[in-house]
Length: 229
Image 1 (cartoon, rainbow, N blue to C red):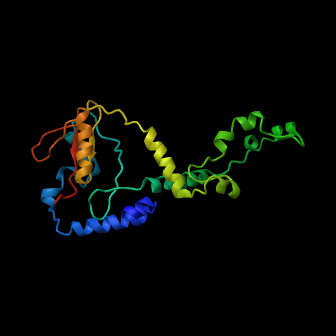
Image 2: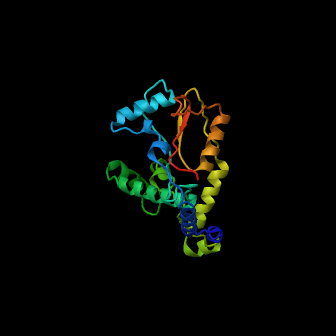
């Protein structure tokens, strides 16, 4: 698994990891009454949001839920590949640009500018080009716009390695968002290590955890969907 990860073969490494965790978790068992939080399950979505508001002590109705849910079959130490995530972002960005389509009208055709430049001239310095060249061209995150020879001279980096570099740059520049227990609420879910780390981060910022078993209200709750052996 470590060798595959070092070789950037993340899918193969994830397969080995999941198989190991599945074998380790064969004896793990849980019951719905003991290991789920019934207060967040409701047939009516409106009722569920009202219950979530009460749990989080929010003065206003919950209208937006933001989060990332990454899961695997074993239910332990859920992880995701940042390299795959960056490559997916590139694909989605390309599709978004294609779905926007091509607008053809008097403004986009710019016939007066073409006539003004005339034969033998160029349009790089016209007001029409300068106003649009940043938005009209898609600038890729992972794809390489260089020709093949230049690509080889620069190290022949494939999509996985370019995405790996992009992910590293994003992590190096990342700054945690401001969180305030007076206005923010959270619900966290994951494996034991993830819960421990995230809870410690929230506790350090003044958040208090709620407990549905004791009825204690708090600034964040833990959805214990995974069972620790």
